[in-house]
Length: 227
Image 1 (tube, rainbow, N blue to C red):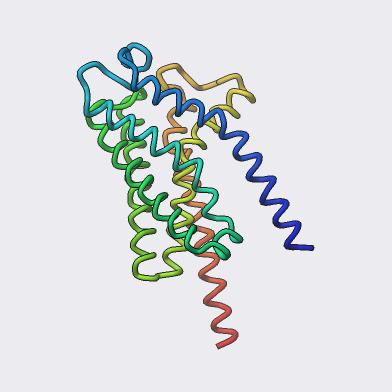
Image 2 (tube, rainbow, N blue to C red; image 1 turned 135 degrees about the vertical axis):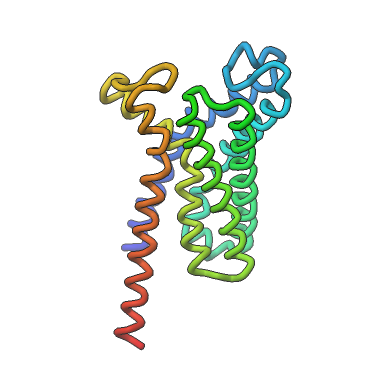
């Protein structure tokens, strides 16, 4: 009964997640279409005329990031991991590749073009890309050396970092619904905007780190009690 309840709860969470993800996916596909058009620079500030490297980096960032957000929840499904080990490993390799591409493309774009929010946003987003890239590398490394504890810990970090761009938009959506956009400006210079530069990934990493430390402490305590 408990397993059935857990499966139903997991299914409902996934349904809600993917329903909220649809606007994000549509936006990502739309921006890819814009990037491929001849007048991309006139349709979005993300693209610029005669900036082929920056435009290509942004296209890669959007494409890989959109796929990453859409696929990463599947990797945490326990039943899928246990019953389809080959699929779990294949999907893991794909997610790591997408994380590396997303992070590297973003870190390439920012020094070339910067961000609409200025130096603080550029620094924050570059840091996010670096964290995502590092987590992807560490997940792959832990898998190769068969470090199960490290693979689990870095996998959790990568999971929440992978959701970062979606969480960023969720924060804004909820804030505008609750306050009408108080503290947010079109150029992302408002107090809420400045907090959001870091709030979409740093607090989640801190919570994940606390969770990892707590689980490790519980495990070590069990070993002491039951040697």
